[in-house]
Amino acid sequence: MRQLRFEASFAQAVKRLGGYEVIDEVLEAIIDGLIYNPYGFPVLDNDWMHIRYAVTRPVTIDDRPVPALVFTFAVLPNRDVSMINVEEHEPY
Image (cartoon, rainbow, N blue to C red; front, side):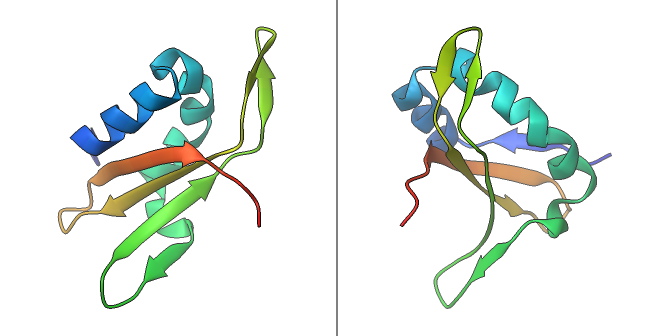
């Protein structure tokens, strides 16, 4: 079974956003995709990086607004998923 791992950089990014309680429900919405088909997410691939990403929409959970977020992750050689970063998504 594929494992979902959280890098220290991801934990620091979550802390900057206000903690796991802020992003937990949004993260839950993409976990199945990360576990069962991480290759289905868009990829950024160049000479310096090969990462995938998932972008969420802004939502309100328990009367608390959660901004649009972009999660970056890598699929490791053993097919586990390593969560690298999460930050507010600011459309261009």
